[in-house]
Image 1 (cartoon, rainbow, N blue to C red):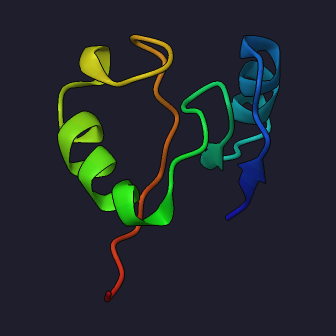
Image 2: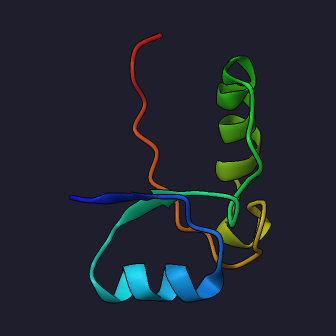
Length: 69
C-alpha cells in the first residue's frame, strides 16, 4: 500500500482516504518528535482508544508497524 507523507489538513486526509491510502503521517497528527521519544509517544498515545489519540480527536489515521530496535 501507499503511505502518504506531509498530511496537514482535513481536506488532504479526506482525499487520501477516498483513494484508499491506508497510512500516513504529517503535522495533522503530530509535530516532529525526536527518534528516541517515538516509541514512548506511540505506546502512550496511540495505544489508547481512537478518541484519545493526539492531534485531531476522533480522526486518527496512522498505521504503525513495529520493527526490531
